[in-house]
Amino acid sequence: MAVKVNSEIDQLNTTDTELIKLAGLHVYLEPDVDSSIEINDKTFKIVDDNFNKEKSGMDAMTVQNVASGEYHVVYMGTNAHGDYGMADIKTDVHLLTEATPQQLEDGKKYFEDMEKAFGAITSVSGNSLGGGISQLRRR
Image (tube, rainbow, N blue to C red; front, side, top):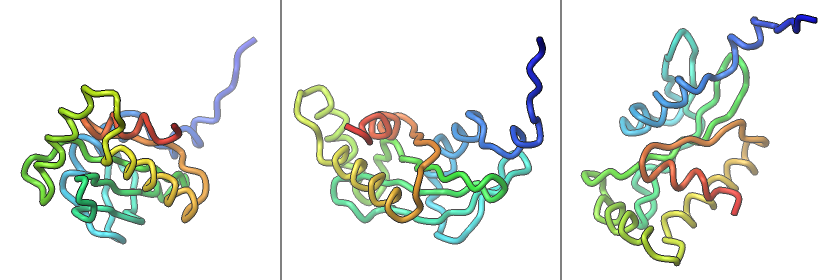
């Protein structure tokens, strides 16, 4: 028996490739809240950001896929040239220890704040250090 897939719904949802582009490029460009990003004919609206606000170096943005309504939290990875770039480097080193670095705690809090503000978060992504932060969001 063949399974029928609704390709119209699938075309609206955010793909892994689009999440990679958000985490690997667009978050580093620090787009403004209420601006939009176009990827593969989909529009992602920046609904919140946390750029250069945390002394721990945690940078992130929350986007909404306008067509599907999905919300995604995207964490920035190590950015040595950012306002708190040295904090990123210290966090990278600190990850080798057993203690949880403050940047990861700040990332978890950001995720929780976004859930309160927007409801269910469809996915969390990040590049490099941002990927590590994304894995600790529910700990």
